[in-house]
Each structure stands twice: as structure tokens, then as C-alpha cells.
Amino acid sequence: MPEQSTINANDETRRLGIVAGGGGLPKAVIDSCVANKKPFFILALQGFTDPALIDGHPHEWVRLGALGQAFSILKNENVTDIVMAGRLRRPSLQEIRPDARGMQFFAKYGTAVLGDDGILRAVSRELELEGFTVIGAQDAAEDILVPQGLLTKKGPQKRHKQDIAHGWKIASLLGEADVGQSVVLQEGLVLGVEAIEGTDALMKRCTALRRAGLLPVLVKRCKPKQDLRADLPTIGLETVETARDAGFAGIAAEAGKTVFLDREAALAAANKASMFIYGVTADDINDFQA
Image (cartoon, rainbow, N blue to C red; front, side, top):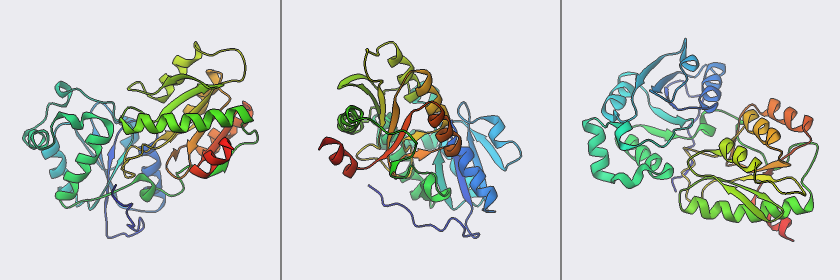
């Protein structure tokens, strides 16, 4: 796994290129750049980037498969560092419609890279071959990762902790297969695992599968071979609201490797709903199993 970058985000001689997908992460990175007066440029992906997000900021649009155009734009904009921020729905080859540079990409790596991890690692490799430095969103925006420990007023019960420990192992297996990052459990039963639908859809689907007894929990962790520069697991206000509406007891997310968006609002919503949010580490898992 590539080591995390030690790039100084406040180095004004470097211009950050933000490859913006969906969700709230691109906004967090953009807001951090604006607040810290860090030069940046947004590469907006057709069908993924929210047009309102880039309004008033330097940007250009590009379709997902136009790698040659994307590389040229970034170089012409004097971008030095790249952060890939936000969700990308897994595309089909027909949707990608690769240009000549994109065709070279697939000739080199094959269609096997269409899994989340595979394509992100391969794109990162190609960006570096083009002379860019790929960094993680956590290197571009400060304090966006889930800290360790209980973050809410209410904590998990003993049975919840056992479910979290069990879900931690299952999520690891899912990650090894490059399937998903989340699992829902209730009193030892696996109600659902995340696939292409995403975390919010997973929780909604599990609403009808709930049993009588303690409420279910969502466990979310980084994939074992995750490139920490892209596609980190993410929670935020929307996650909390979906979990609340789906009747969940709480959320356990891997500390230090999960992005936490809208933290203040998310914690306030969790406390109001008497839900827990726990930043989990391997040490916590050992304690939960004791």
C-alpha cells in the first residue's frame, strides 16, 4: 500500500487539483482550500459532480473515460498535487467511453480494475506517471477523520460491542474481495452487507429485516488493502439521519481511516436520537470481544 503523503497542504507553491465525485467530501476539501488560501482547481466529472459545488470556483468538466483530456487540463492549469474526493458510482464500459489515453489505460490494466479499489489504484498510478503527486483528502483538509473512542453521549451496550467486533471481521472479508465497506448486524445476525448500492441504501434495505430485540448497528471500516489516498469510508449527517430513520442503535466506524463530514451536526443529530457513534480501532475490537 502506498504510504500517505507528507505534502504540506499550506505550501502555496503547489496547486491542488480536486477530482470531484459525488457526496460531501469534495465540498470539505474545497472549503478547506478556501479557508487556508490554498490554490486549487476542480476537475468536475460529468454525471458525478454537483454543479452547485463548483459554482464560482476554477473548474472544467470532463467525462470519466477521457483520461487524455483530463491529464491535459490538469497540466495546463499547473496542478501539482491531486486529490480524488467523493463517490464514484461504478460505471459500465459503455458509460466510460474511453478516449485514446483511456483505451491505453484499459489495454494496460484490463477491465478487472473496474472494482472500486482496482480502478482508483490504477488511476493513481497513471497520475503519478504523468508527474502528479496523489494525496489523500485527509492531507488536503484537516480534521476530517473519525477520532478514536465514543463520540456521543450514549454508548453501545455489551451486545452491540459484540456485534461491532463480529462486523469488523465480516467487513474485512468484504474488503478483501473489493465488495464494500459496511455491514449491518443485530444480536449476532448479519442483516445485510454493502455492495454496489452504498451505505445509505444498505441501511434502508435492512429496515424491513430487523428483528425484535436490541436495535441493529452499522459497522464501517477501511478495506484491508485500501489505498488511503482515495475512497476512504465516509460517514456524516446523512448517514446518521438514515440510520435514525431506519431504527439503528448506532454507528461504529474505523478511527483514523474513515472520513467524518458535517461532524458537529452529525453528532448533534445522533445525540438527539439517542444513538451512538464510536470510532473503532483494533484495540477496541479486542476489548469488545473480552
